[in-house]
Image 1 (cartoon, rainbow, N blue to C red):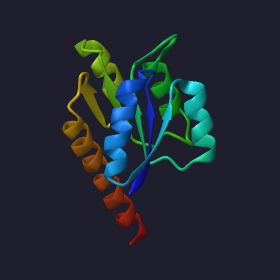
Image 2 (image 1 turned 45 degrees about the horizontal axis):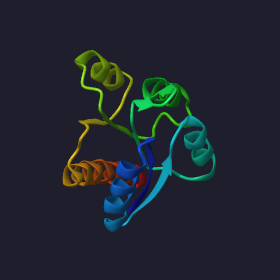
Image 3 (image 1 turned 30 degrees about the vertical axis):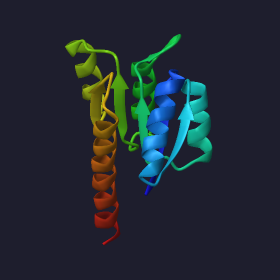
Image 4 (image 1 turned 60 degrees about the vertical axis):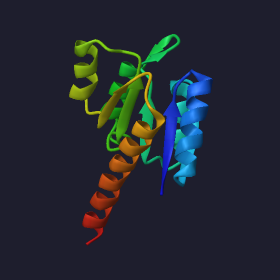
Length: 131
């Protein structure tokens, strides 16, 4: 169905999300920081990035900004799933081009539905481009 990478340093949450998305036939990779994310992006064709804004010493905003400024990665859809609730912070990542934002704690079913919706839109775009 598609390949997703989850960038989050909270292992138990990441593992739950990974398991739920894998049950829906998505191939799910994971990373805990930008180094692991960019390493995966060099070797894998990623269809969707799910990222937390708070990643230890890194801030997801700067990772997203870097992705959106790079012609190689700027078309990869990015979904933020974060504990960040401040409107200004949410608006900042929306303004740089994310496709969705969920506030933690997030219901697994909601996460799966949103991912499926994003991937369906991506599928539709690919089919339209081929025709």
